[in-house]
Picture 1 (cartoon, rainbow, N blue to C red):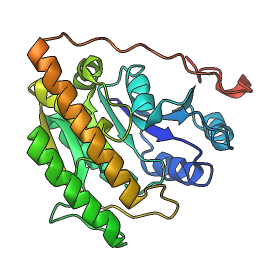
Picture 2 (picture 1 turned 60 degrees about the horizontal axis):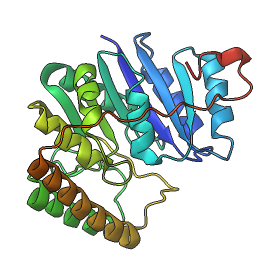
Picture 3 (picture 1 turned 90 degrees about the vertical axis):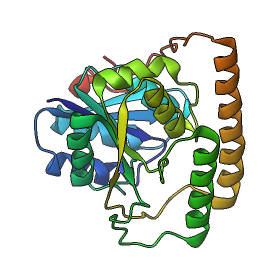
Picture 4 (picture 1 turned 45 degrees about the vertical axis):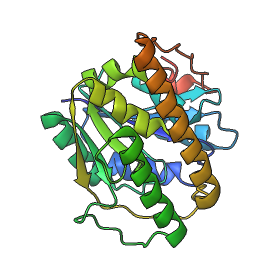
Length: 261
């Protein structure tokens, strides 16, 4: 069963190499591919991805204009024909074996998401209290407005059956902070099951999350998504197929000629 792991990355030169090295080493099966979705990177991220791709044909890079995390995941999901497709953050906070465990669950039920708030989860590094409070508050908002049962929609590790992921794409409208919620709502609308799975999650240095500022933005985005979906239901509008954005080739290309395939 083939698994494509999408790794969204915006200027991750300090972390993407370590993540690719770890994932390539632990997930050595030839049926696993690592699709790095570069979100208008202006640092050395693309060069590091190119280096790994030159050593391991399972690594591929796709460079996009600035689309946001959700936008580049959507675009790269659309280029996958694997049996299972998932995504993981570029900082390697989710160890490779935890992602593989999600894949095994997704193969059985349809979808699996990692949860840092599951009682059985292991977090060796305690998250800052501001982020913990913001996470709890946002989870309550998601349950109240969207009726999603999950305790942690925002953990950056999720795997879906490939056919289910591709069926969800036309229904997605959120490319930013609310992408994870939008994806789970689309999968629910398709009648599929998604299981919340305990995980090992290691908080990494270099996070760009601002607990206070991002909480306000996510609250506003959550309300906007709720209103948008409510209006769509009332109007009974059909889903609109997303417009594909052509990835920008990574230069130079000799050793990774399929980067923009």
